[in-house]
Image (tube, rainbow, N blue to C red; front, top):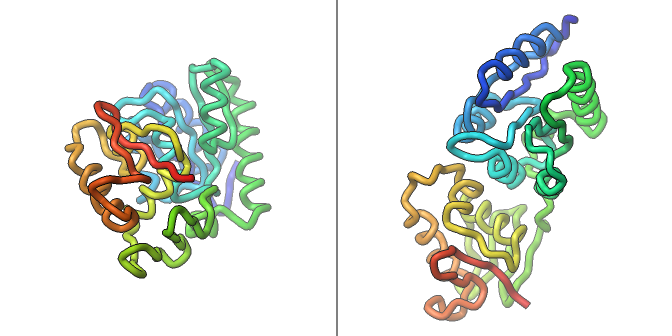
Length: 243
């Protein structure tokens, strides 16, 4: 099969024989496959290669697949992602779906079924306006304007109205706020914040997270030393919540 415009497919798989087998078969089908061997490499290649679809394993070294999925969904809710995993438990599928995966196929799998699912996801993306356009647009489940306490965040303009007045938020500050909003009321460990919010491994200093929390408290808390919205949980991490 020959395709005039080859679709780029990112294969995130640490088992070489599976990754190479998928690459060969996808190439024969006219696709342009790219392989990432771990979660950190997956995020780097997602940003640089701009794939049209991602095939994602869950059990990955460096950063697990579900953290990779969450990180991507903070910025792009449109790129089709198909989980291909040996983890077939119902809870694993529910987690994947709740984090925004489009399809879930368990190992061992039938190649023809995988190819059909890939084709269906790419067609659906094309019908909704095209994957190329989708990658340039940040569309996720976070409201465009979010209000809590006396604060208002406008994600369209990357600005906030808070006790400091009108401020501009950095891309990383917006990403962190989206993560907190998506997990409102739920504890987030420093490790989780680093993996999902930054795409970093556990080797990164935890002061990265703490420094950003200090900034968010300075922006949005009436008394940053006695936070109401961004609370610390000893030996755990942080939790964001409000009435």
